[in-house]
Length: 70
Image 1 (cartoon, rainbow, N blue to C red):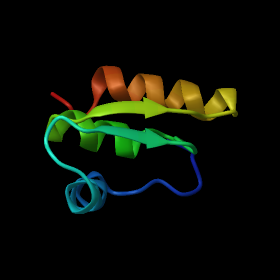
Image 2 (cartoon, rainbow, N blue to C red; image 1 turned 30 degrees about the horizontal axis):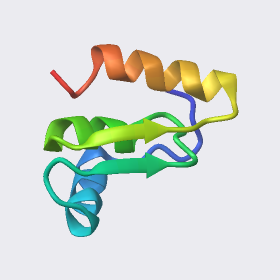
Image 3 (cartoon, rainbow, N blue to C red; image 1 turned 90 degrees about the vertical axis):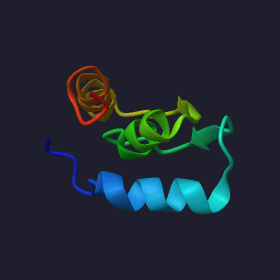
Image 4 (cartoon, rainbow, N blue to C red; image 1 turned 180 degrees about the horizontal axis):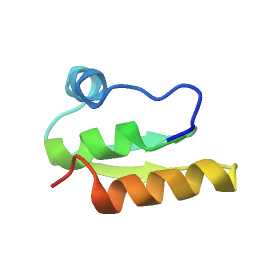
């Protein structure tokens, strides 16, 4: 993962639980490598991610398919 500001999943889980309830939908306007999306999946939240950089979007897709979600 060569994204310059990858966030720890545990940190994003903590932040998502601070600002939302079970079943909420989280919007991440700057998705980057997808840490927030992975945290949402683990916590039972829906997730919408927006990323303009194709390289980072591809990193996020791979992380969603193969990562900490399992």
